[in-house]
Length: 406
Image 1 (cartoon, rainbow, N blue to C red):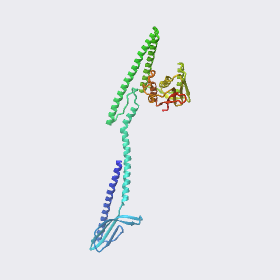
Image 2 (image 1 turned 180 degrees about the vertical axis):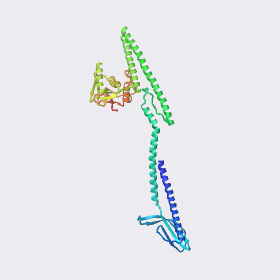
Image 3 (image 1 turned 60 degrees about the horizontal axis):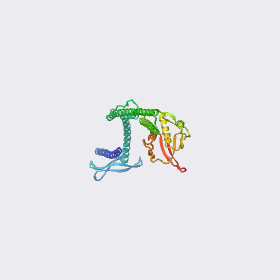
Image 4 (image 1 turned 60 degrees about the vertical axis):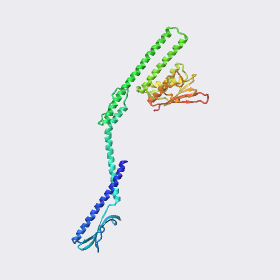
């Protein structure tokens, strides 16, 4: 915008300057021609006229010199042309002469058009030159920055390879490189420490839980216990199993957050669901129905796929009463798990949050569906939940759906 305003102002200034300059040059030419005519008359040379360029005639008296513009018909162009005219009176050899000289001048419109077009041409050429020059220069200057940016995009905490950043002569880019190296090294160190801490905690928790479980088994096997003690020991065993599951799930979430699942294979989810159903039948859970309209195949880590399907089915079993049917439907890209329910959830928007439990269900860790959500986010899948009320028998349905289209 600033360049355009400057171009307009410069064109206006150049127009008036050029017009004034041309006018002065024309007037100098007129005075020069008049002087030559006067000198010729002083030498008693033949007087002649060449209208409209030069006219000489005798007059009775002298008058003031007049310099003006006039319009005269030009037969060669068949139009009226603008002339600059010098009309002067001279006493030469005691004879009064009226000398008139004229010259064709460039019209203002021609001057304006010439200036505008020349300015536009200069402006466009300068713009193109500066654009390509600046583009090439900027690309050269910014190349280290974009190279380092690509390195940052491929930076992985799980990799031990040092990040390879390009050097730059620009002070700011050089400082940025230094800070990036310091930051990435610190982040990688913190990540390794946190990872080691998580693995150590997970391992250390498993050991005392296993010892507690072994001692409980010894108590049951070596000592006579009454019914109340048996119930208490059974409750302790269930708590131990929940702690083991909680530890396992927290570890899984941590590994997903840290992008530790890099193994990607083609997984047939339809077949995996069938295998899961057969496994549940061995546990006397026979009310799971699977309908497949097409093979659901996707690319993901097989271990995470197993966790995803197992958590969805286990959640449906956990909240299904009276052995009512659990319906699973798979299409080419969508998995739907439906279980019955009398009432909708109080906070359906929180169903996929970590440690959220609907009601006071002691059996739930609040991490099963959170892991489902995290796995979907990791691969770009879309998990949804909705409650579908029934208008026939009053029994509604909780519907969990995963769209595997990325």
